[in-house]
Amino acid sequence: MKQNFKIVFCIGVVFLSSFVVLGLFLEAYSQGILTSEKNIISVGGIFNQNPKQITLDILKNVLDDSKTDNVNMNSLGFRGDEFEQIKPVNTFRIFLLGPSQIFGTGATSDDTTIPGYLENYLKNDNKSFTIEVINSGMQGADSRKELLLLQNMLLDFAPDLVVVYDGFNDLRSGASPTQLLDNWNSMCKLGQKHNFDVIVVLQPIIGFSQKSMTQEELVYLQNSKDYKNNHLIDSLDQYKMYAENLEKLEYCIDKIDLRSVLDNELDSIYIDEESHISDQGNAIVAKSLYNAILPIILKNKEFNIFESEKDFDNLTALMYDGREIVVNLELLPSTDLDNKKVEISTYDVTNKEYIQNVMYFLSISKNNENLLNEYFFAQDGVLILDIQPNDDSLIKVIGEKQYDNNAYVMLGSKYIPDLSGIYLTSTTPLQLSGSIFSSDGIYTFDIKLRAIDDPNNWIYPSSGFHYEINFKIGS
Image (tube, rainbow, N blue to C red; front, side, top):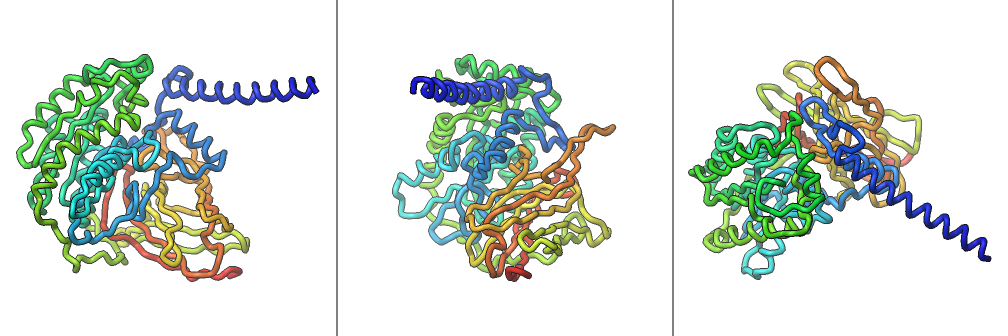
């Protein structure tokens, strides 16, 4: 009996020790201790990633954990619950626009992101009207991409207030203070033209204030780099110029400098070298935004009711940059009665060529029940999904994710060096398992384009491409 107990005890110790070793490995790897390279970089910077995050993503796929980081994406491609495209009557609609710090990288849930906390604070005031706070944060975004999102997509959703939360990614990309000011002013002018308010916020960055940093945060500061691999702290003077230009904004209802908002916190608030913050930090930032936003809401006695005649019909073709663009979806022939393959491609009708470097946002539903909302990236523009039906209501995507937009890339992709740097080749379809094609019925595929031609060429048509597949088992 004692011998058996010793065996069980030893096995338990080994099992627990393995997790400790794995955790130390991931932490050391993420801080560059085990390698001099901290980023995997592809064309356009679309694959800038924290190596620990890459490893965790791979482990989650291996362990069959499909609900990564408790992120809920709605059918419009935003983090959080569904919302109506045509704004309901007696509703004050707020969009929070910004990079991954707004999206909520590192947050334990949708509710513990900055937009999540802000919505809860505002709802607790028991007003006689509805307040919507919509998380339109994008991983990897800077002010230029946010301006594109606002003017090409968010305007169609009739915002009453847009909060722009910026600084870190513009600084990393080397944007000049003048460029940033121009982008901010352009967003504020859009607000004046389309009858909504804009608040511009300068975000806190690790090491850029008087916060007393923990030992862990000091390591993050040491590892914080710009896109040219220079220490980000060397750009402190430029960030001060960002703050000076913040005060020069002419067309916004308010501007908020949050560089020092975390200075009174003694615990570790920053969770990595990219200035993502903990749930506690998100709550502090959201409270500061709440204090500025509440007076603006109370001054609004009337709410913009978005015109009901606005056309949200799906496209048969998209005109972009003088080109007619179509998205094709095809159910590929298969000798396997159980598995089905779906091919999605984007074609330039004007120049008679397939478009490359396409970011898709794909929604799949059946009988008005949503089955999948995910981003996918295909370098050659052709996305192939190997669908393996079963009775599991939870759809699982087997593949690797890139950092920007949390988009899946084709399984089996390889990073291959060439004269210009590193590029991605995709050879193997992504696998989807779950209730897609598991029973007869009409399956709808709604596809929106988010980037074409170049990974950084982000576009935001408000409408998308709609397809229906009348599926019968055995067909």
